[in-house]
Structure formats: structure tokens, C-alpha cells
Length: 524
Figure 1 (cartoon, rainbow, N blue to C red):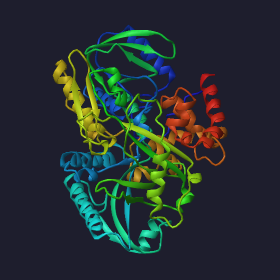
Figure 2 (cartoon, rainbow, N blue to C red):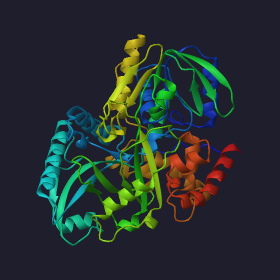
Figure 3 (cartoon, rainbow, N blue to C red):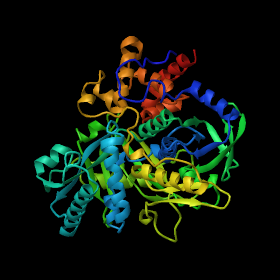
Figure 4 (tube, rainbow, N blue to C red):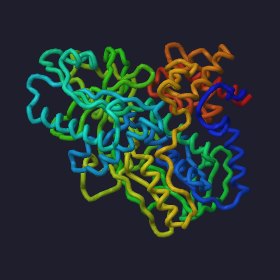
């Protein structure tokens, strides 16, 4: 398959610098086998691992990231796709992580990824019979969120202040709300991602543009403080890499890399609905969970004409599966909670798909997983790698900075200061420049200024301008771009991570032939 033209306008890195594909993977694997000691080896291709690779590379360190499967294969693709300001942590006294989350949210919305994020209103409806203590608690929480926003330096133009809304406004934001007894609601603003897996891929591409080597389908084995055996799962070949520092960012699998780490994963489940079931939902509909002061069930608009409803927080002991599965009790819990505020209850048959992710929480005494701090930790066991664990998607950049700081100090690396708070990701664009991109708005939302390349390919080749299946808002050109620029190597990469078509089984089946055709064309 011919590489997509990079001659159209854009403001990202120089052409080719950020492109991840099979050919580049082969070249860089060979160079790694022939090369000298590297500075930093990063294990794990989720949001934290790719963030570490970007941080290290932009400090001038020779950096290699290896991922046993695909980018965003684990927890990073199973999030709520929200960029949280950390409000819920205030309820349990977590002022530090709440402020950190708000600061990182501001950086994502305004500098790092304005093309992949947007502001979203968060609506808590008020009904007759809603207890005064709960209403006061929500209002106090939203006011605290306003303080967090201001202390993080986020302009009200980016995230407006919270306010009460009348019944008509509540119904405009969430038309399927139960009208009987509805007395308006309270609205605050938070951030939302276009897609979490897309964020990870974009961070990886930006790291590659700054010189990092990004290798998927490469498993790290026999990991120590300064070396690892790398196993290419596509060819079966192995090589030993020596590094001045090794950073374990394997998430829920971190204890496999370093058995000295003890994790206590918790499972968060989401349901997938057609957007039509919510009749034009234009907010994150937020339903307090009875008996909790900090937990809610959310229903929010998502990509591909969907609405996600989530999320649970359940202890998940035992072996970590590649793809966690929701339980029926979790599905029933989410349905029951969201149905408590809807005019017409959703049925089990309305659920188009469901997904679950495991949070890599550090084991503590006997706390429930919902009460375990989401603060991250940088750990070091004797003779083992540096491990970064805990935290959450919104704070990935700070987690990466702390991990690389530890590597620099521990190994005595010569490195510049952290720069990632001010480095836009590949495709970052906003304002008038965003409006001027020669591509459909839906492509601009997914690719930023790189959408011009996808659109140009579709104009040159009418076959690429076709959807991958009837009724699915993904072009064949997007599959082609994923293979030439976004590191996709197989059918599941295309269907399950570069796009989220695979969240609905019927859509996945319909789009699979187009994915296979794109792979055949790429290998021709």
C-alpha cells in the first residue's frame, strides 16, 4: 500500500517523523539488535508507558518502548474517556491528587491535546424528594470544583463555572430524563476525550517524532535494573538489551515484570448504547449512587453514535485477563442506577456492548478498592526496574515525569528538564487553524491537523472515501492511515483500538472485511 501523502498542510512534526508502521518497526528492531546500550527501556505501551517514552525522549535520552501486544491494549482503552478534574477525591480528603488532576486536565485541554479533548457539561438532575443534604453536597462539590479550576489556571472560557439550571435546560441537555417531579439540576464542566486509545497512539507517535523507538508485539522477559531479554512475538526472535535504566509501566501486569510489586486491581465496567436511546444526550448525565458521597453513574455521548454508561468499582482478585469481562450483576447495577432518573427505563436488550477495565491500584491494608487512593507511586525493588503504578489517565503526564526523574537520579543520566507540559501532541490544533483544515469535522475530531492527510487520500482514491461498512462513520482511508502512520499491525488493532468499532459485536463483524482488505493492500 502506498504511503499516504504528507504534502498537505499541517502543523505537526516534520513528515514521516511520527509515522509508526511495520516497516519502521522492522528497521528499528534490527538497529536495536546492532546498537549500543540505551538510556531508558520502557516496558508497557499504555498511556503511562507512552508518556514515559515521550518524557524521556524529549529530555535527550535514547529511549526504547516495548509492548507485548498493541498500544493501548490494556487498561488505557477501557476508561470512561473523561479528563477528570479530580473532584471526587476531595470527598475523601485527597486535596493533592484533586489539584494535580485539575492541573493536568488544563494542560490536556489547552496545550497537549486540544484536538482530542473537549469540555462537557456534567448534569446532576434534581427531583422532588431529592434530599436536601445530597443537594447541598453536590452543590458544595461543584463549588469546590470551581475553586480547583481556578487554582489550576483554567479559564472559564475553557471550562465554565458551575450553575443551577431550570427544568427546560436540564431536558435540553438530557431529553430522556423523567419529567415527573423534575426540578432542574446542577451543571458543572469537565473534560472529555474523543477516545482514550487514540490519545495513547498519539502520545506514542509524538514520542517517535522526538526520537523514541516504539516497538509493539515485543515482550520483555528476564527484566532487571539494567537489562531485559526482548522477544519478538511475530518472528520468535530474541535479543538482549542493556539500558542505563529500565522503567516498568506495565499497568495491571506490572507485578509480572517485577514480582516484588503487589497490586490490588479493581474493575470498572461500562455499557454501550445507541445514542438514539438517549434522544440527543448533550451532557454527562450524572446520577449519585445511594449511600456514597463520591461515587456516581454517568451516561455520556461517545464516538460512533454511542452513549456509554458507567462505571462500577469492584474488587478484581485473581489472574489478570487480557480482556476483562463485565459481570451480569455489574450490568444490572448500572441499568438500575441510570434508570432511576429516566422517563423510559433502558432494557437489557438495549445494551449494544459492554467493556471492563482493571485499575492498577497498589495493595493496601483492607481498604475497599473504591476508597484506595488514586495517587501514583514510583517504586524500586533491589536489582529490579523502576516501577510506576497507580494513578489515573488524566495524570499520566505527571506520572511519567516522576518516573523519568527517578531514572535520571538513580542512574545518573545526563538529561534536560521535563518539557512535556508544553509539548503539543501530533495533530494538536485549535481555534481558527482547526477551522481551516480541509477535512470533515468528524475527521478533525479524531486526527486534528493530520485529518488533512486522511481526507486527501480519500479524495485521491474514491474507494478509500467509502465507509468501512454501511452505517459506520469510519472511512476506509482511516484504516489505511492506521497502518501507515499509527502502528496498526493486524485486524484487531484496526477494529478494537485505532477505532472502537469492536465495542459492538455486530459492527465489528460488518467492518472486518474492510480491515482484512486494508491489511492485504498494505502488504502488497
